[in-house]
Length: 343
Length: 183
Image 1 (tube, chains in turn red, cyan):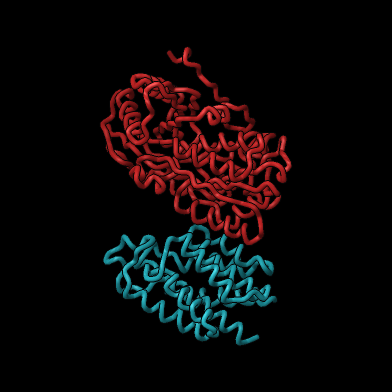
Image 2: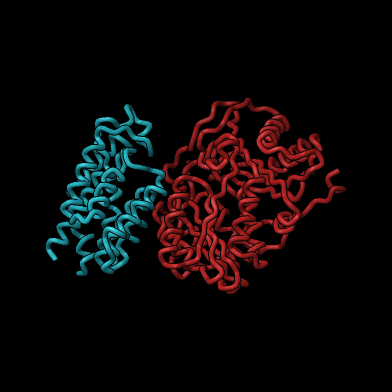
């Protein structure tokens, strides 16, 4: 499949160039052109903990698009589907670090973990106050008793936003880590794929899927999923996913779930809104109120067809941070839905 | 040319002549590009300003291997450039590599050459002792089954094949000894 780019060598840098020249909220870092930092309303890093993440390219708008006020202070941009190197992440930490410290968010994938944790070690050598938080939420990648081995999936967006808001309001580094762990432990995600994305590096589909079948539990790079089911009405598919999510981490009747419906690049808003509808109904049948939805394509894998559903059972504080105003190029406005609105 | 630049230049030259051998070792256990990856990183390291060689290596090599070998090169660069104690720096690198790679002695990895060399230095040995210890450890990886990385999925878990990462560690130490001897 043909894609639009100048060359494989420059595709990531061309993208970053387009990004920083399009949005006033962001600019290039001074330490390296692959670092995108917040430009507007920057706070003194001696007073505010700075929050950043590094990730591979090809998944936009995440996480570059979440740099801005009330969100991330920086994003370190890696090559296509490849974690940024430890030294580049270290440059990103140096870019934003101050006396209040820096929190590096790491979505759990092997390259990201090795490079991210190595960057923290090198930062410690320089006496920088920097710590890491590992993020994982994908129920398909390990059973509940090995929760800490799971992959990062779109539920990590709860952590970006909640910690970004909390940092903006002055929560300290240890407080942010405790809050982030608590959000992580209350979040579960599961995905379904109906068609592969095409790698810009190879021009080839990233996996193949038998006609009429759906993969459940596909990873963000097309890693094999947990199971298959036949293609059919979406309400059945969503019912299966919601059931698996709640089996993994139950929410009591009368409880609330904040919801992320994430498209993977090749799924339309028409489809995603239908999935939200079915998710809300599936939760409602179990006496759970769906609130504060984030619906759209945020963690993408090129034009992969599919979606994920993430559920967070929030504390009131988490919910307040999740719905707090923010200003970045790609994070949407989250509206808390009242009980009445969903009845 | 600074002593660290000299180190990276000589290392680049040696890895250049042994790239195909390292790739062949890796082909038996992984994706067959270890020599190429090392060469790519070292090409940039040798051209970098003093003190920035290991960093340039990490950036250009990429991936897990770039980081893990980069940590060894950080240790060597600190020793050569800043006069830091080699045994202490390498011990730190080894600890970090074990933690980051979730790898221990006997897993058929770079650690099987690195750990004996670090132990030899820690016991007061010189670089000749370290090279000998690394080489013994490297040779012993032939008889090991891989427990980490891609090699654990190949036939017989790589039994009978020497680990390419351990081989590179021996080369790193050999070139370091050569540099120290010439000083």
